[in-house]
Length: 213
Image 1 (tube, one colour):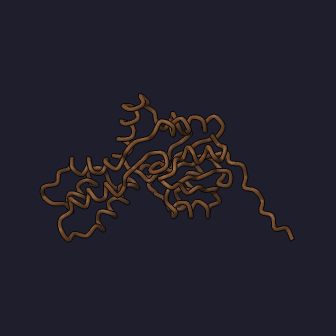
Image 2: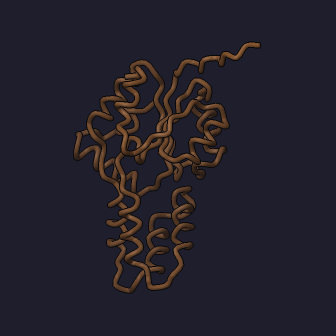
């Protein structure tokens, strides 16, 4: 009886999550700031529903902000909500951008993110202001897949299938990197090689230790 496991196929593609993998973010800080706007005793369920709808591109930025304002005290303004929402985003260390450029010399590199219009607008402005790079997606990825443009979100298997079909990649030769176990689990079930990223770990070091960069 042969008890040896077959080695995993060689990695030819990388599929990165954005937040807490490439981009440093502070979700708890933003949630706490948004909660501070809510009227006493009000349910947070409509907020989470609005967030999912916004991430899937089913509602506009204006409707998303107004949905939060309806839950908030009369003192809360649209600008307060926008600043709190974008306050989640911290930045991208330069070594991660260098890592992506090195990876692209030998691999296909893709991005798959649950995100929204406000955050991507912020990211584009940040990249141009901080690094002088006006084309974040084109510079660092072969293709970038954003939930609000695709009408779908992780951990739905359907969004992974859209990536597979659009990019023409094979899951078994693709390494998917994400910080959320639910997303990793679905990707693994679809045949992807996976790496669960602890936000406390530096992705550049992790991939360097595995010999990819």
